[in-house]
Image 1 (cartoon, helix red, strand yellow):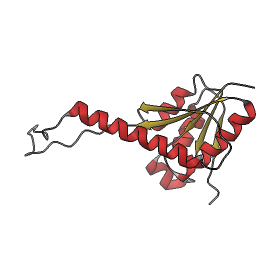
Image 2 (tube, rainbow, N blue to C red):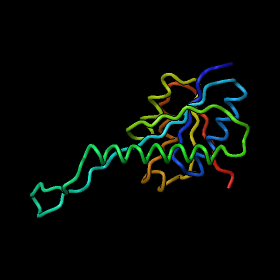
Image 3 (cartoon, helix red, strand yellow):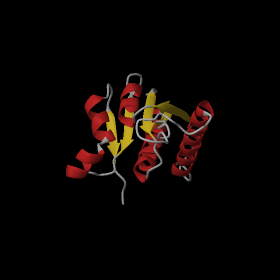
Length: 151
């Protein structure tokens, strides 16, 4: 039963558990595993008096590239660390600019399964911080598995 399994990879323990679960499922299904990391570039705040538009002198395209490269390196390291010591599986890495929930919902359009980790927040904390897993469950176009860390 081949296909594509998409897993959210943000470097947290919850996403590490999701990666391990998704890797095991990919081996069982002989499926393609796609680890996706969403990222956003936040431009530096303007410097100067209120009402002025002075910004720090910098190389914005260079800064953007450096941020993307750092996010990609973090994705590579977190996937490698999460899957250390488990039976090998081929993993394709994808870095996508945008909010995590929307990126994973978009990836669900061509996936057979989306796997996300859950930080276990509920109530007020979930309302204030948002819940990527809840958003994906509510909006994905394919089945979703939510994995919670054991600890």
